[in-house]
Length: 275
Ligand SMILES: C[S@@+](CC[C@H](N)C(=O)[O-])C[C@H]1O[C@@H](n2cnc3c(N)ncnc32)[C@H](O)[C@@H]1O
Image (cartoon, rainbow, N blue to C red; front, side, top):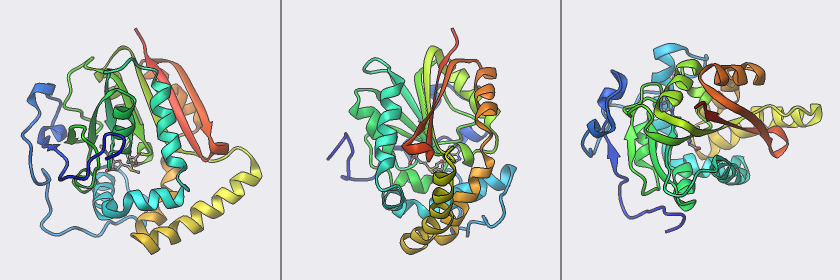
């Protein structure tokens, strides 16, 4: 066991069918379950050759992550040369929250950020759309299957929110940011990690080749080629940095700070819920 993670059995996953229908109080979270709330009898082949929108995007993203979940961590470590571990650690420390603070990790996937949060003495709760990712998670944190745009949490109930590498997978950012502002208490903190395009021209060229050519090959070798071809293309969903800053401020946050990581191949966005 490391960083509060466990390999001893299935993670504890709360069913949250209402997450797709509207918000309920935290006390209304469902029972511990053994299967997804929207199970398909057969996994569908993710349709990601075009960049989907709306409900089609939700389904395609969920199916893609269900499909790649078993080898998601391995591919992540290989394709980022383990830099992703350092990025998540930095995100957690940048929250600068006191011990035992409640932090919701949205789009928690296999629980990497939940483990970092727990190791830092914080109290994480993970939420993700993909049951496959949650089932593959290695964390002791409570996990909820649900939609980050419709959280089953009471207003002002969280001290912090983290979200790692999922912004480009969401249908729209304004409702997501509004949901963050709703569930956070005044003065609560957010730390959003995402991939980025390096500002330096040479770095940008090298990164383009690596992300566009090498990453899909690593993905095809170790996991699912189409999913890792989608990854570089999905960056197109991300707004320009200034637009992103404005959206966050418009949602009710102050001190919006965007930091580039590892020469600009990743970004960390920090902000504080206005009082
Ligand atoms: C690239 S993975 C990142 C996982 C994890 N945060 C990490 O740092 O490794 C993106 C995750 O976002 C989840 N996701 C996508 N759309 C979502 C939504 N609307 N609500 C909750 N999770 C979502 C996917 O299921 C997937 O687990």
